[in-house]
Length: 388
Image: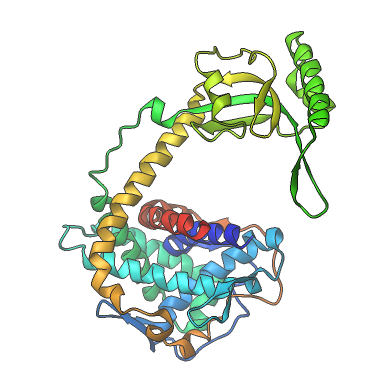
């Protein structure tokens, strides 16, 4: 579950920290603490000072989103879930993890902004006007107003955050502009099938998977054969699945990713869409009867092409970004570089979780579009890394 939380954290940070406009929540994130230390320097990176109030805004918006989006999925105490240990072996919580990711996000924005002039990136008058509009909407929103009040920030502080993220987005667009975006159907192909699998394994009370005996397997194979004859006779595969108490009939997969294994995938080559796979096939997890829905699922393949391009862009970005930050990161240590006494004032968990779904203001949607590209791609890499 902690890996799922990390993947969700990476994706959510990408949207919240760039848009900063998720509104309609019952809380501004956390218990509603206030600070008089908002103007104090929390950390310095690449010769740029970051104040507590700036990081406070990022962190509180993150917390507000999680409270509305994930508490119903993970429970109200998800902030306290253990995510591993720190460098000293002390247990860390999901709250600790997100707070560190917020700092990483701000650092990234600093680096990208520092390269803007070199890459000839800047905000035009329209960009600045948009950021001013977003900041005004944030400051007038009930939740946004609460966050600014907590840390002593102003509408101008919020505008600065928008402008920095918008500029970071422009820098990243330049960084990945030469990425190869040509992806063939063969490379991106997603195949869709409908199938019923008759398992030849059992799961014991201890959670261990055990192979059936040869006698048991023969009995399973006979059931699969009978079902195959029904399929040939025109019975809908969904009806066969219901009879077999099998619920996961639809599967869409890329090459090498079918649950039934690579040998099963080879059988599908050369078949026509809509055809029934000949005979009962032995697969990685039992016996399977199947119907090819689409050897090349157009929608799924198109979506996969976009994913492949995004991954290529991420690789391009990461290579360049790592080169830029090698010296900066050489001696960087989160626990030492960040004033932990100040940072401890930021509490992300709340005493009560809310089930209210967040609403996004019009300005927030535009802000996400404008500034989200840079952070979304970057966070995708973090999600991949965290899930490993």
